[in-house]
Image 1: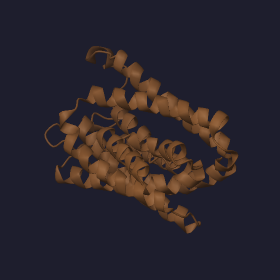
Image 2 (image 1 turned 180 degrees about the vertical axis):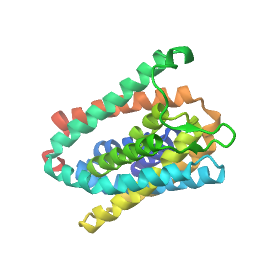
Image 3 (image 1 turned 120 degrees about the vertical axis):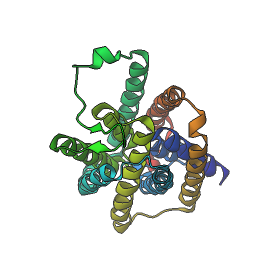
Image 4 (image 1 turned 45 degrees about the horizontal axis):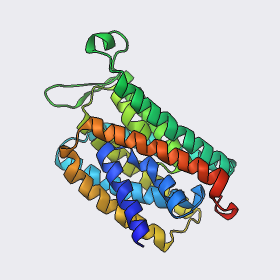
Length: 272
């Protein structure tokens, strides 16, 4: 029980502090509790979804959630999540582990490169134009067809990955929203948590209806993730964004290495 609680709290903290930490849930369950990815997916989705819901409620209270954008992305995500679930059934566990590990490495390297090379505002100007622009007075999006299609596409890809890998989609949502909009960091994380909560809820219902079972260890993990999210929201204002992003990048890189090591060297065949 203690181990499950520690893993869950860690995932909840990572999710609440970065908005992307949910991607660590499946590796935590696979490595810490020796579950296969198909077994870990429903547990990870419930933990991520409930924890993200708490974070989103806190964001709504602080008025940092762009709820119209979140609803649009969530609808697109829920529509494509079933396709992700079907794709997951087509691949053997070893392939899913490889895809998952590749995603973790890509995210880690992307964060590190962005932190090492930060183009000036002058360099960025003219390089790309933000697809979604906010009103400086209200912080809300100025809606256009371009913005609508951009956010809808981001939500759709997030839902596809959620259904396929049980990752919540935050690792894609946060960088994509940052790249294609001028939303500030707090609103980006809060809005992403709202999308994750909604998409995870829809995906969990589909997975459970297909016969997935949540063991007692999974229940402890889910409860602990909620506690981790609670503390993350309390501590988020005390830690710098640079520290959080670099810490997450290092954790994701380590998780990728451990997943691959476990897949090819130490995991028993009956867990794959």
